[in-house]
Length: 234
Image 1 (cartoon, rainbow, N blue to C red):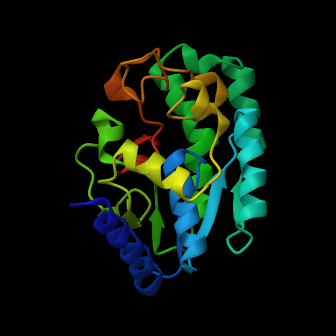
Image 2 (tube, one colour; image 1 turned 180 degrees about the vertical axis):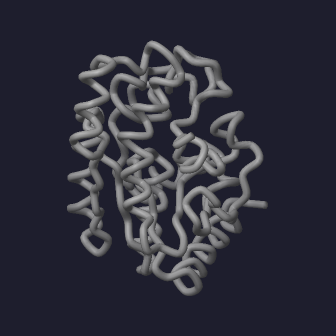
């Protein structure tokens, strides 16, 4: 399939989501893929809302991009969700400010507080949500489908860029002058919280810079693990 066909299918899927699964929403974490979807939603005037999760520990470059997006795409304002203050305070006071380095369990607990619980609030009342996941991003994402039921959150989940390659993502960004996170120019292809993100070396997997102290099979925060909302609460 050539890229023009992929692009047409992506736009058609976004329009179908808006028509058949309203209200639907898009989770924008300001990575390259998310900027492609944001651009398509705005330029195609697709009636899908956009939200983002501010964990409280995002890189400054992400906040800079957040402001640019607000200015460039006023038709699709982004609603920002924050973690519950009391939960963050309890975690830090009990475990330490950087306890997520100490074990997978503590890291996932931090992710639950800063991402999963705010995500659950963002998805309340929605019939579907959209992500920028691509199949080639990670070993944990090879079995994804463009549409699947998110049992953990109780709604449909769509991955419109699933079959896009990294090269296609960046060609589209450059051809359409789409703003992107400055960290991408510093060899950071996958961007999350500042303490959990580092540049990658040549030849490394594109997700190698996320939670680099953990094994590859653990490298998900829980947002995109099936039944995540259920399993992480156990």
